[in-house]
Image (cartoon, rainbow over all chains, first blue to last red; front, side, top):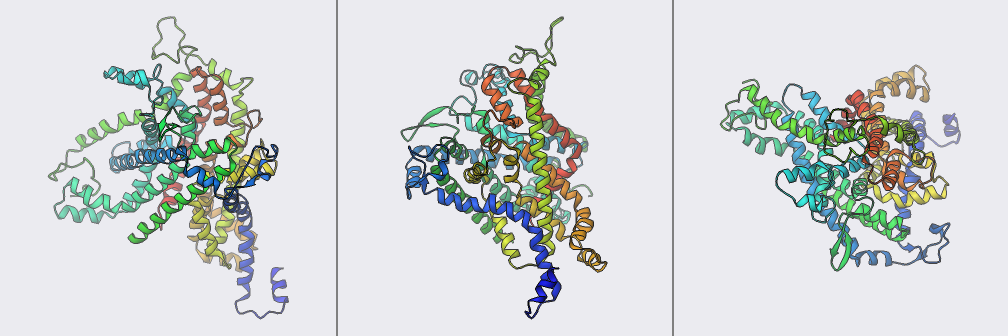
Length: 322
Length: 296
């Protein structure tokens, strides 16, 4: 049918007829996906940008706040940049990223190296280490809240048995000093099996002949690890760093669960009171749930820029490799 | 000579002479088994606590004394049919949302993946590159505008509001497109020569040959939406009839702070089905992750 309409309009065809036919069917097949993507992914980016220059106000129509926002220019961005809470959100995110990403990569790599041999039961072990990755983050966070409980949890008791009373008194997620490392520890344990699978795949792609050549040149196990294996795994390590950073910018449920929706204990930062574990994703949620939609949109846009910078750096580095 | 190719960390002595196999294995187990216990401590603790009688969940005791009723099934029954926090409803809602999202995602990603892989149309490569770029930005930035859209469409407290906004899965599109690109063109041409329609080619050639990847995407989406806490939290008001497991558990936690036995019984309803699903279908999970992560 489409052929008839196309050839009936009298235009000369330089390309074979079936190519037009093919193109039309190409559009037909992408339409459902593109429609959803346009409405829920592409439009939101533009709309976020628009919203970031507006804000709800005292007399906004309570039933349709989004339709009744005032233009405020760059006020939202300026507000954020002058707010210590915003800077603490970025610092906390950065600290959390430093705690969680290198540890995850090292732990995943070590696991992959242990399980890259024909150790009896290696298949079952790989699956067992991977399993927690598929569990609900929020629910796992609630379980960790019990494990970290200073009165009734096993970890505080374990440290007391070791002779460290500090956690019994101050808890793990109940003080500003250990809250981020404690959440990071829980998340590294949950995610290391996922990284392990990625590293196992990458290890599998390294030809055996490279190790044989190193062996013939007299390299010992440690030299092989540091001068052969790790350099060859560099693209995977970079990939995991970048996806890890984007993951940290997105982190929310684990913080919501392990701080009982508060963002953690309060402490002083740059002369303001901030919540110790209020990372960028949590801060964005808080702006949103307090109905500061304009500020939340501006925060989204700042996160978008950070995400794009990370991606750009990634492409630069990975591009150089290839 | 033969087995050094696979020997990496801690498997040979520093001067190159291979360690006896039994030692190597013993060393590996000595590291891996305690670590495995630590990794699964939350799972074990959840299950043990969920079976404990009220009051015992907060005690570090595990072996009941003679005549002591330390373990019970009561928590599961109470939580499942709780009047204010009915976990049977939460579980059903989670199942509907996760399944619905996975079905729609697989359908539209397979169709679009086929078009991007095998059809030639103006703007194809530019469009694909643009979509891939969106995949790399943090997803949380879509929260505010998507919420506004759902509000505008009147989809607050509905399944549709929870399902539809997350079905344009660009990772899934990428996965399917990579797979379909690997199918030989000659198969599609043969179908065309035999007079198959475009729809017929899609359903008789492309879909049957993509089933494993489609299952993988289905499972990854299912598990992802089963655990999608933030979105399900904001598109539901607390009195919504469509609360899902994590949101329900979060409200339950707000109400019964100290009843850890019941809270862990509630957690079991979220964790255990996924554990079973993974054990049954782990091949598909791992296949999808390795296919998606290895660039090239």
